[in-house]
Length: 122
Image: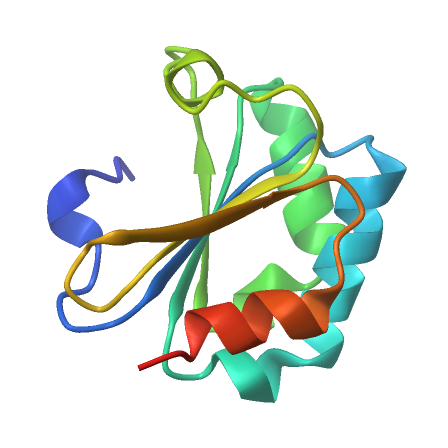
């Protein structure tokens, strides 16, 4: 299914996570998000990768992403997000508030407490 800007839920904070399925930092951050999913229930998490679709689907299955309705996984087949967000380290997490305004970004092996606190700021 194609995912477009219209699929971003209105009135909710958004956490974009640009990741590589084979990146250990990305795997660690994903585990921490899942472990702390209760802190993200008011947000929409969109995980985006540019790597081959089979790699993304394997990651999706390995981490049981289907069990978390807060998370949408997307494949960036046109390689838009890396240059747009100037990604240098993985994962790159970008937080937008419920009005769609940019709040903050994180890169690398981040402290998930800082991320969820940023997502949940009013």
